[in-house]
Image (cartoon, rainbow, N blue to C red; front, top):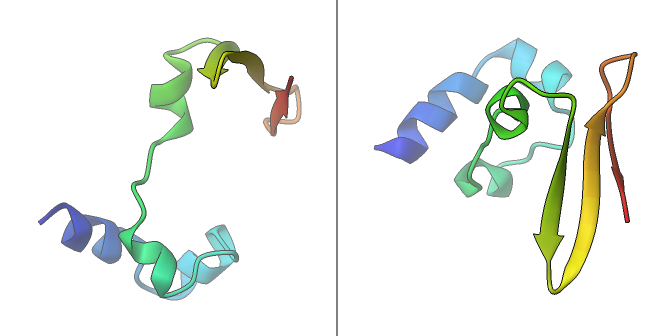
Amino acid sequence: MQQNAVTATLAGPAASQAMPWQGVAALSLPVVESARLMAGGREIVIQHAGQSYRLRVTRANKLILTK
């Protein structure tokens, strides 16, 4: 059921413009909205394999991930 909601969200001509990297195989990937991930803030720290990464939203509203 979750996959159907994602598929419906990505359907239509705007989907290819919004996420040009999306292909048929990518439809089964989980989708996380950046606003939810950022929890109202502008940056977070992500722990991965004992390393810390900083994910931040720029003034131009782009995402940058740095180690």
